[in-house]
Length: 378
Ligand code: ATP
Ligand code: MG
Ligand code: MG
Image 1: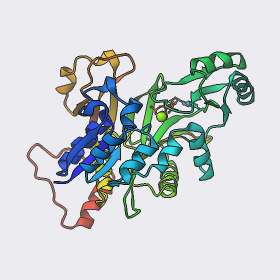
Image 2: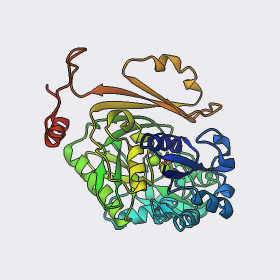
Image 3: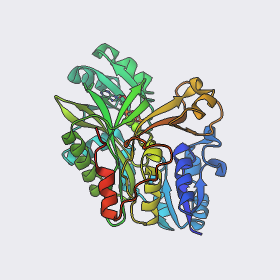
Image 4: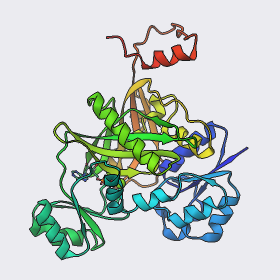
């Protein structure tokens, strides 16, 4: 068989591996001590493992196509692998996504609105930026996730403390965006340039961590279209191959404001595993392998809830809940703020027609696609 290689051993790699297995691929994951996905998360993402040239070469030699599951893998390592085997996405997206300032400039350059922001390099520039923007959220330019490496600035008096809290690293200060909700667009671009969009997801965060994603998002149609247009521009500008996610703030008064890009499958798209014909994970594997993209149509409404840290110890009740699908990441040792798994609650868009009613089979592919896009009967 054919083998897909994945750089990274977290839960996203684990779920990608499951999708690859479904399509008949073998999977080789690359990480610290060759750990199987998520089995040794504590050892995860040590830079040394991703800069070990001999090990990367050996990895590339065993796979037919390679990808990465986290955006902090060094671009040079992706380039090395890409020189030895088929690889996607291209490393150029990493230069954009590994630096919040570069990311904001890239998005603005495409005409996509972003939050007002200022570069911060020391305590003085933190204070100047805080005065200019009226406070906001100070973020390290590199390596932040799940709200880590961020500090609120309520007034310019907080600037110095916030800069210390961010480890005195290169930062940006973002003005506080007032939004009605946050949404994200998960999309895939294939080797032939075709694009598949998943339905927009509405995302609720708590303490900077994604708590819940809901589809449909319940925003006006033109917002859905606006998110698609912006995401297509990002995908095309990068000649991207694979799944990519664009996060937004949305308000009725200010419209869509892009927050950040994730060059990978995304937590806010986990519901696609149960609610779509072809999940974001399978879609990414298809693109990486050079296959046609699959149908991203959603057959059910969904609410995905993250299981975070210590609260999520007893899984048995969730495992037995009707209409709920449980995914656990196999991490050892819950900590506050650590994502341990998620549960998707699924609501089919068509009412059930009785326990043993045979499904109506559409006669043609066209009829099938109409059946999927027809709104549910009132
Ligand atoms: P992720 O896990 O999504 O990669 P992250 O650590 O990269 O998270 P952000 O997405 O930048 O962090 O911010 C996390 C959350 O904090 C956002 O989803 C939003 O709820 C809030 N937030 C971040 N920046 C702003 C802003 N400028 N204005 C208002 N809220 C913000
Ligand atoms: Mg992020
Ligand atoms: Mg984010």
